[in-house]
Length: 387
Ligand SMILES: Cc1ncc(COP(=O)(O)O)c(C=O)c1O
Image (cartoon, rainbow, N blue to C red; front, side, top):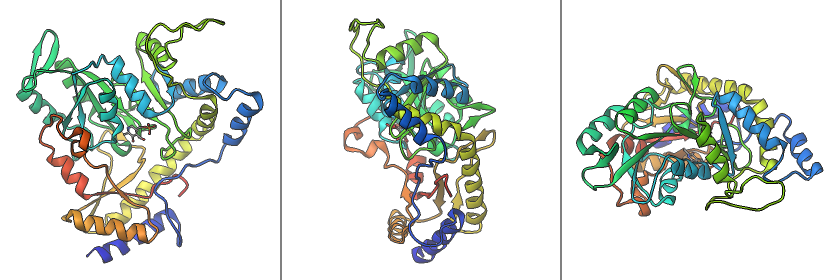
């Protein structure tokens, strides 16, 4: 079965990517604008580090693209998540609800604060946290005391819900925000993979008090390494800037720092790359959606496969296209992954569920059967914007 299926998938990928022979990579950067010119400008002017015109410009352009009032550029998306957890008020021994099917940066950022990730299941429609399951779970294990939510089973405070827009597909934002309001949870959106994705007519990242982006080399828009914190709250934005800039109090010559903070600001060199990339974002998003529609029409002809599409009412950036294999075992999926990668088609499964990683095995969790089913059957196929 897997030989025939591997051949079918390879054919579809090669046709959609327009690459007849040779390797087809999963997702590579697309530099076809002013990248070289802006980076050279940083070198020529010696503004290569965390201060410089491109950092400010990048933040302004990001605000324009996302519609979020404040954007604070960081060294990477993980650092942005760490600061968001701090600013959401997450403290030692708190719990933070998050999906188990996510990149390890999310539970890690929770752990950096001495808090405990608490895993919940996803919706098969969005691949983000399932609002119905979450509500039912909180009714069972949650208790509101002193204006905070507590876990009846562990006695710990549950401070925040950290959601993620998986592969660029927006989560059920209205429903999740409603639950957070009812249960006194601070909503944080990990939009690392979702620049350009919309919920309703709005860019994602506006339902949470805070949200984050990543500009790692495998993302739709890259700064080499980089991330951003997004918020509409003026005071939170001020604190985010301060905490990512070593807590330095602005002064012409004095070096005075008023709190334990972090050296998390994005360097000008990286921001220069980002400015050039942002200029091409809408072109890239169009290409991504066209690629997804080519995949959709071809994969829909294969009985054993469902091509994952955006849910109604949202617009996904289709960062990484995903197929779901029907009725296959983990072994069959692995053998398919081996065959395709051996043949030069770079495909990958979703992440191993966070609750199975050694450091998170003993964390609290709800039943995760949907996450497990997706983890076993989903494969990401090559999705470069250059196709
Ligand atoms: C969902 C998600 N969250 C967080 C991150 C962390 O971003 P970074 O690699 O920039 O630290 C990534 C990607 O890399 C991601 O995919």
